[in-house]
Amino acid sequence: MSPGLERSRGGDLVGHDCHESLFRRDSDCIDCRRQEVLATGKTHQCWIPERRPGRFGRRQMLVQMRTPSGQLLEVVIDAGPAESLFSDEIFRERVLAEGLRHVSAGVLLLDAAMHVVNANPAAVRLLGEGLEQLRGRVLGELLPEGCLPARGEQLATLLATQGGLEIDEVRIESSAGSALVRLSLAAVPAPGGAAEAAVAILTDITRERRVSLALQRKLGEISILREIDHVLSRTARLDQVLRVILAAVVHPRGLALARGALFLCEGEREVLRGRLLRTSPASGGVAEGHLGRQLEDLAFAEPTEEDRRMEREIRDLAVPLDTSADVLSSALRSPATT
Image (cartoon, rainbow, N blue to C red; front, top):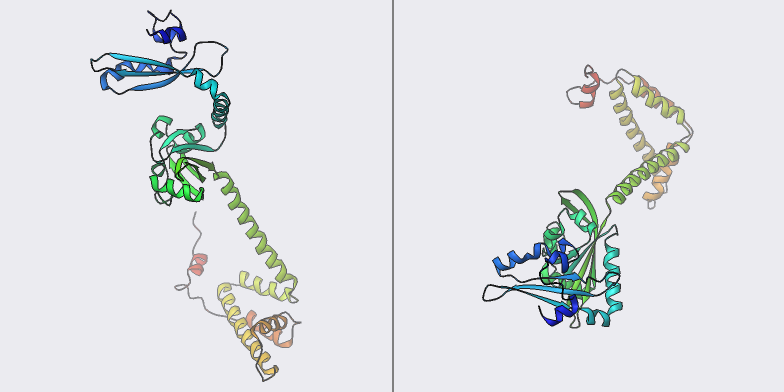
C-alpha cells in the first residue's frame, strides 16, 4: 500500500475486503471487476466515495489494470484538491444531475459524435431499454429512420451551425409501447466552433396530441352545427324543406323520391340563373359573386305559385328503384340481420 493511500484511507486497509474498507456500496465495485480485468486486460475505473461520514464533495477514483506480469494493479487517485478548487461548479453539476432524475421529460447527454453518454430515468422509460444498453449507442439508432436530418458527426456539425434543432412529432416504438414525443436538440459549442457535446430532450406529447385531436373534432362538429343553424335561420320556406325531407324518409320510394327532388332542384337553379341573366343589363352580365348572392335571395324568397307547383311534382314523383345500381337501396330493402 502506497503512503498516499495510507494517508487517505488509513492503515487499516490491509487484510480487509474491499467491500469493508474501500467502498461504500457493493455496487460501486461490482465484485471489484478484478476477475474481468485479469481475464480481458481491459482497464476499469470508477469513482468511489470517501469513507468520511458527514463530508460532502470529496471523492476518489479507482483505476484497476493488469500489469505485463499478469498481476492486478489498483491505483486510487484522490480528487480532493480538484474538488476543493472547483467546488461550486461540481456542486451545481450534482444538483443538476439529481434534478434530471425527477423531471418528466427524457434527457439524453451526447458526446461530440452523438453517442449516448448518460440518460435520465424518463428517457430510459420512453426508449424502453436499460441505461447500460443506451450508453454508447448513436442517437440515430434510437429514433425512427429518416427522423433526423443527419447522423453522427454530421449531425453534430449541423447542431453547431444552427445552435439547436426541434422536431415536433417523433413516434417511438419500444417494448414499453408507443409514444409520440417532441424532440429538441441543443449543442454545447467547443472553442473551435464544433459541437463538444449535445443534449437531446424527449417530451412525451401523446396525451396532449390525443386531447388536441379530440378538441379539433369537437370544434368541427360545432362548426357544422353553426352552418346548419345559419342556413335554417335564413330559410323562409322551412316548413316546405321539412316536408320534402320527411317525404323522402317515409315514402316507400324514398330514395328515388330524394333523387328526383335533387334533379328538379338543380333544374330550378338553372331556371333562376337564366331569369337573372335575362333581367340583368346586357353589358357585362352579372359578376359571379353577385350572382351567387342573388341566387340565394331568390332561393330563399317567399314561395310563389311556381314553388308550390314544384313541391307538388316532388310529392307526386314516382321513380322505380334500381336496386342493382343502388347499394344503399339494396341494404335498406334487404331483411334485417343480427
